[in-house]
Amino acid sequence: MADVKKIAVIAGDGIGPEVVAEALKVLKKTEELFGYRFETEHALFGGIAIDEKGTPLPQDTLDICKKADAVLLGAVGGPKWDNNPKELRPETGLLGIRKALGLFSNIRPAVVFDCLKEASTLKPEVLEGTDLIVVRELTGGIYFGDKLRREGAGGQEAVDTCVYSVAEVERIARQAFEIARTRRKKLASVDKANVLETSRLWRETVIRVSADYPDVELEHVLVDNCAMQLLRRPSSFDVIVTENMFGDILSDEAAMLTGSIGMLSSASLGEGSFGLYEPVHGSAPDIAGLGVANPIATILSVALMFHLTFGYHDAADAIENAVKSVLDAGHRTGDIAVDKSKAISTSAMGDLIIAAMG
Image (cartoon, rainbow, N blue to C red; front, side, top):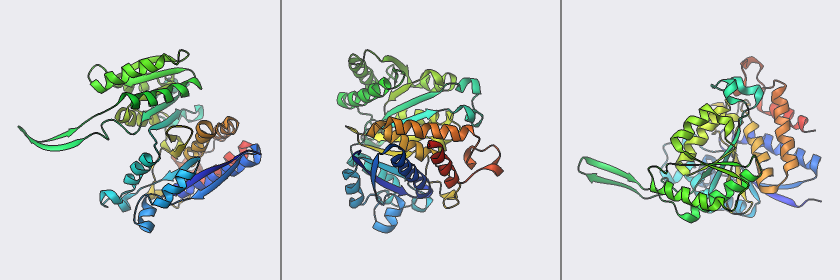
């Protein structure tokens, strides 16, 4: 019998509980089909934790996550908490949990399904064959550097400092090379080495690390050129690795190639196999409770968990193939439906995917 894997389940806010419920049904189906075993423990996080515990990241939630092999997160936040002080905002909890769990990289796949090409704003022939992953460094760079307001010669000035160490670049580079090895063995390292000293350090470090991965083709791309090429030739990219701010921007751009943010999974990883898995989309409070949210991003986050944390590639492939089969059959939730009158519910989409798994 397979080892029991512990998963901390954080449903979160808005549509989070609805999409996580469908992902949990997929976990159960995986147990039936493949014999894998999962033990789930639920925890409060984000806005609901603020309301019930007075903090976005309760200590007991953190303890549950630290004891788990992986974390499944729905979505957090909403306008209800927008005017809270910084320490009582759901987003502060996200930064806190990443730091506490040592999550230094964000993995975002962007796959264009043939049957959904019409949902994208790009021409179908441009999108043909697009299947890429953005690996974003998550805990360094300008977001975490020193910040300063001061009086200058022209009045008030603001300064944000971008800092990277060789160790920070090396660990994210190695992770990206390892991921590339499991795919088409192509890695694009994105920087601004023609202008920024941090980018020159980034490029030097990636080149040095690449010597340990002679089987992976390495390409260096300036960030502005990468932004253009993602729209011009997205299928030419396999794995993209880049620093925090560039990754934040480029991963959102790559997300829009697919036509709907409701289709996109993500992982935040640290050292070893532990990871936090969540859909890219937000909590969508405007549709919460209506049963119309797209659960595919959360379900594909489970597949990503199987690939990256558990190594259950057979189960992950079954989930991904089931999603493709259901979409090829023409089933759509409202966000990806051309004819909104034919859109199906959150639970109906989950049930169809489970049925298609076998």
